[in-house]
Amino acid sequence: MALRLKTLCIVSSQKELTFIPEGKTLINTIYAYSYVVAQKDDFFAKALTQCDYLIPDGAGIVKACRWLRAKSQPKERIAGWDLFSFEMDRLSSRMKECKDEGIKKGKVMFLGSSEKVLSLIRERAAKDYPCLEVVTYSPPYKSEFSDEESRAMIKAVNDADPDLLWIGMTAPKQEKWTYRHWDELDIHCHCGTIGAVFDFYAGTVKRAPLWWQRHSLEWLYRLLMEPRRMWRRYIIGNAKFLYYIYKEGRESKA
Image (cartoon, rainbow, N blue to C red; front, side, top):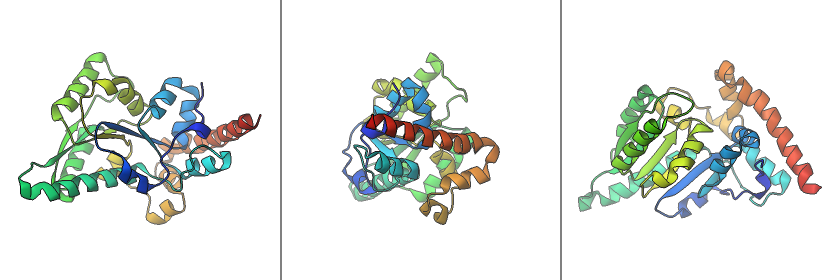
């Protein structure tokens, strides 16, 4: 069954992030590309939406919800970067408050990407968040993991016992893997699937300047920066997004 935006429960604003309770919590993002992929991939659609919180990482999603008169009416785009910054700042602030009580550093784990990117993340985080300890794990670069590889990843997470977990293996792989192994992850913290944020934070991929972000053109900036890699996602993908949204609108009125 194809994913339907009209019936999804989506976080409406960044302010709502403050109300997410502590404990084991899965946070996914939905944007035009993931919506398109989910139309033909039932398992991804399930993995994407069967989470605790779903945030609208795309102006297209926000506008489509309005046009469809969907159940959820997000007021603004909440980028994966916004979630990342919010969660990192909140944990860091909490650890600063606990510092005088002799409590150890908060632990953040990054699962995914290359060792090069993870090394840059560790270096930057040490400066940006001195109250946080960063643990990383780089899985094999492949479309699907073997059972042995997945067990090693699960063990790495459970052994780390993080206070915050980030998974960045690009969509739809990261959502599928996390959903498939969620019950095996013995964690007590928030977990976000944030893909490209690993590269943004490491500095290996430059995020669009604020003007582009504010005018909902971050996708165009990425297309201009990486046309060979991004043209299918943003040219063909955006056209499909408009088609599927129009189709969903027609079906809801039938």
